[in-house]
Image 1 (cartoon, rainbow, N blue to C red):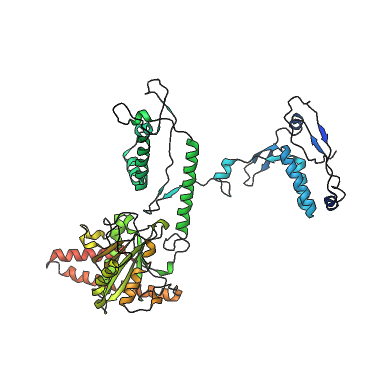
Image 2 (image 1 turned 30 degrees about the vertical axis):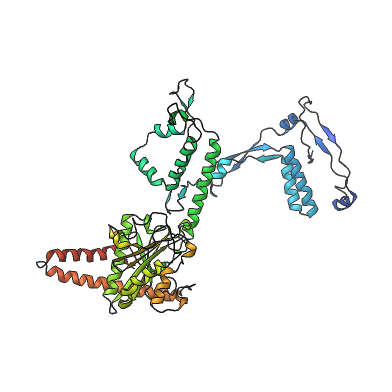
Amino acid sequence: MKRTYLLRRPKDDDEEEDFYSQEAVKAKPIDPHLARNLGPTFAAGKDFVRASQKSQNEFYGSQKIVEASTSGGGGTEKEYREMTHDERNNLSASIIKAELKGDKEKVEKLKRRLQEGIIEIKSKKGEAGQEKNGEKKPVILMEMDRKSGLAKPAVASNKSNKMSDNSSNNQHIMGVIEEEYSKQSSLDDMLAEEKRTTAEDQISMFNRAAEIFSQNRQDEEGFFDDTLDSRKKRKFDKADSQQRQTMIKEHKFVERTLDSCSKCIESRLFEKHAVVATGKKTYLSVINWDGLSPDHCYITTMEHYSSCLVLDEDVWEEIQFWMKSLVNMWREDDEDQDCVFFENARDIHEQKHMSIECVPLPREIGDLSPIYFKKAIMESEKEWSVNKKLIDLSKNPRQSQGVRGLVPKGFPYFAVYFGLQPGYAHVIEKEKNFPANFAQEIIGGMLDLHYKHWKNPKSSHLMKLKLNENNYVKNFQNMIGQKIKVCQIMKKKRKKKRKKKINKIYIFQFYIFIFKIR
């Protein structure tokens, strides 16, 4: 006997109903206007049946279906449950809508589902951690400090609700303070925690201490006791869930930033054709627009950093060797050119990839460039400022560090270097008052160029970029070839001025070692 589908009404809370008791509920009359649209089949409506829950359980029972696995490793067992009355009503309503639309395939499909009367049980754990192939892919959540630009692994709070036996009545709950002091931390853990701690974390800690102290929970002598004040914190689950959602949000922001970066080597937008030479952790590339001169280039890192302030020592030393090699290359050129290096670290919270641009200048203009930049920095932004407008990098005890150590991490700034000589730096207080092409405007004015060279520049053609790259490669090869010849000559004269010769040979050999010319 073929079983027909019925719209089932939700069961009332009646505990005294019989095992097979059921009650038919007649359909209510339908509006004549709607009855004409429904047709003769559904014009009279459908009767509802209120059945016993026990009879439904006996009819459907606990059903499990085993389906063949695609990998050939036996079968995969899926659990199913019976449909509730509300689910049956919703499915029947969907059947009526599909019949009104004339979708016969959907009607047959929904009828089969209703006749089966079961639904698959979905695992929430599997939905969150499985990929398309059914395997779990572990992901390390990354957390990025919007101010300093440092990306670090996210660390979830590990609050405990264990009981402590140190209280007088043995009913004391371990709070956050005891947990922090009692946990065993190694030296590496403390070092990692120190690196993860930011200024905002310290400010929030002081604010929390002030809030607790303001509640007048003190002892008789007026001192505040942390251990006595510790208590069980409520809503830990909600706080952990919010923290996890924040970590996921930060991780997605980091992934989105790295994928859309055109200077990261692993990014899909990376312009390989513009790279001139690569080092261990940095590389030299020509710019992808017309530029202020044919030899306009930039030095940047292979990994994503927001500014020079957060670079490691070895990365900064490699950048300095790039700068020295460029200065020597243009100094030994026939035109005897000077060069200017500048970095405009803006929009730290947007985590843009840092870069140090280099523009070669004629020797006469290069000698006057410190005067132009000093005057422009002093007249930038507003007259009154919180920070010092002009920072002289020559006053840094470690002049090789440049702007590092003079500007706090997380501050937007502008820095300029004149060849191998230290230059100036400026802390940007309001980015809307400081132009993004500040250095390009000054250099363009010095070279008497049209504003189209730096304002809304257009991307260069691929062939032009390739030509600029080839020119740089030839210049580097010529420079390295000259260094090799000098080394060979100096090896023959080791007896005279030995110390100076050894130092020069070491520097020249280091150039050949660190730069891998394509």
